[in-house]
Length: 295
Ligand code: ZN
Image (cartoon, rainbow, N blue to C red; front, side, top):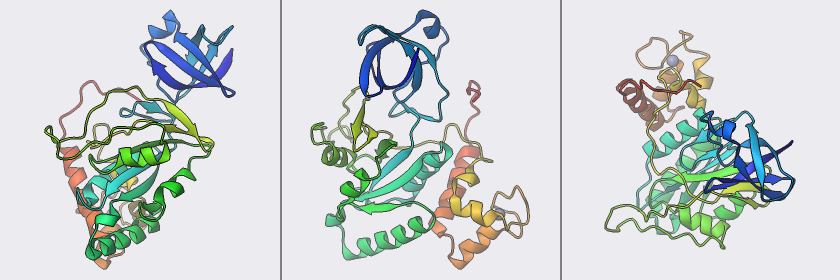
């Protein structure tokens, strides 16, 4: 019995990387009946006498998973955001960051279309960069060899890309993986969204790391998170919360709240706090999920 990582799942076959060689396998019957679907990125135990007729026997514990792209055990999430066309949105960016934080995926921010931006927008992006870097998120600009810098992060990690429609995810992936030749969606097409191409996800080895070859989520709803979990996904709130009067402070109406204090002094970006309040409302108003899986 060997242990490897699934790098592609297609038509009932799982392609497992074991010490640099790829083994084509299927799930065993009793494995299938357990209703666990192995995902690309999963580590599995398998057996095989040759490279085409193996069997997946067991899945090893999963660190995290995303639905789109359907990948498990992700280390790094590159959030692709444009500064214009569509206009930069703190709200959308923070949605991605909160989701990645909640799944223990390290976020990196990649800003596109700076060549189309006015001086005013560029100044705004510089301010955004200094704030987000201060709270721990590296920010790369497309016009500063950003895609080269992103590549340097790949080593020994599993990386996925995500971001709003039309932000340039496919363009970035094409820069990094020219052989992929992804179709670049046009914002203003008749359906109002980028071209949908249904393809399977595959993990490619680039610069010593694994990269999902399909761009993921273009928008995020907080389907799994509770309001109690939300403040923990804002690193600067976590740091400030040590000085809140109440241990379980939600940084809303409580007295002597350090987060609110730092918003008033500008130490915490007002935009981040406003987004926090909005996400809080969204989660509070969400309909109960009766069949929520226990994790
Ligand atoms: Zn507080």
